[in-house]
Image (cartoon, rainbow, N blue to C red; front, side, top):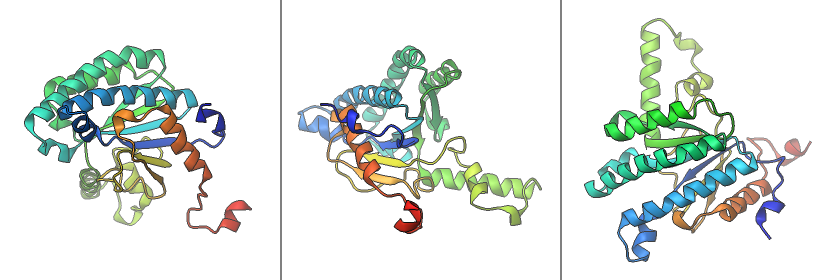
Length: 247
């Protein structure tokens, strides 16, 4: 029996964020190079995107490549960029068929031209879709995002567009790369690491964190359902007491 039948579809997280970790270690365990793991991780992306869309999840953010990942061996980075372009161009027709829209957050100026162009094409070709919003965090780090937001706020203050005394939490949120999306309610990290690795530091303030030993290339819909079921067992209090929440 699939775990899906146990999920209360009236209590789904609106936004799920995933740190897709473990591709390289999975490949090494198979006696292969790291790119072999990234290649097989694409199947997991496809399965989880499909599963999220089937459930009716509205937003899914995948941490695909961090700014720190640029420091990896040049061969691996080049292979990842090639895989990114190939995957995006292959998957766009399927995304359109399933009414899925792509968004991208990150320091995209660092991407090579062929990757940047493929992303722009995908953004344009899926822009009319109204189903699942698939957000790819590419060349992304939360510290970069926060510094960038502060710079923009400072510029607007300097130009008289923003009064310092009006700045609050909502103001900062409007300057983040994720300003068009609600904060994640559930964050999943695969492969047994217990940290969030510079990912959505501001947005994850009240997210439920779920860690699994499963390597990303082995992560499938049933693993997603297990994470959602765990989420639905938790009490989300937002600083209130249990009695306040229940009443």
